[in-house]
Image (cartoon, rainbow, N blue to C red; front, side, top):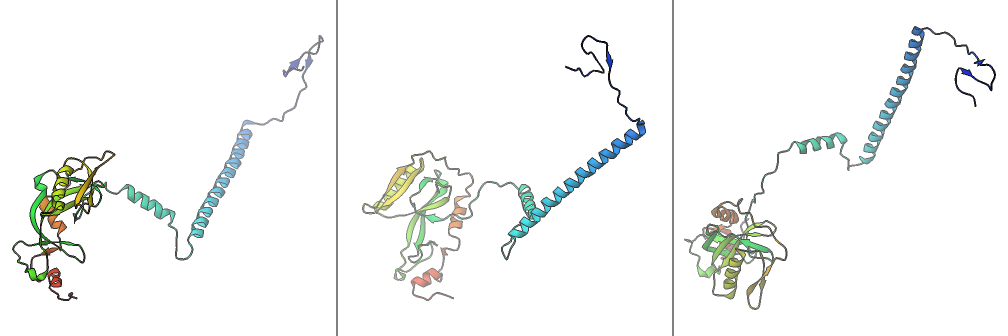
Length: 258
């Protein structure tokens, strides 16, 4: 087997000189110029290829965007998407949730808790429930409403409560001698300490209480305003302080005001 050396040995004979190859002479300056020219052509070719590639990508993006923006239904531009994303990143952090309105209602098959403090309950509030809308109205205690108007005014006890979905409301209980009232007071007492689903059951006229099978976090009462503010929010626009109130006029038989 031949060895890749300049001098090889064949058998046991004398050394044989390798065949000389003539290489044209090239000075150093010419070699450097040749190398620079070659690199320039390669770099130019790569730059041209990158330029063509970028141009094709931009053309495809424009074509894709324009193909989606037909008629009155238009696609959002990539620039606008980028601006919206930047705006979200710079937006202010969201604080704790605050409820804008505190409705008055009775239990509706929800798991409930009642605020344990007496500062978050008010006893003996005069109310009237509109039979057409079921809206509850506050009635000023100094207002004398004649019985001939047919407006049953109730004495109502009110409690701050929270449903398991986090909604705060005011639980209203009309005073009476009925089992409804006694059952409601018992339900309120139990819901002060533990979550219960409160379900009304007609016939015996009582509330049934069902404990939660899964653990529900304890209510956070820290964001509640003063109970007086909650009541003003609940009865905003629903205060009967005059016999000329639209609800009273309707009960008296007057036509609705335009």
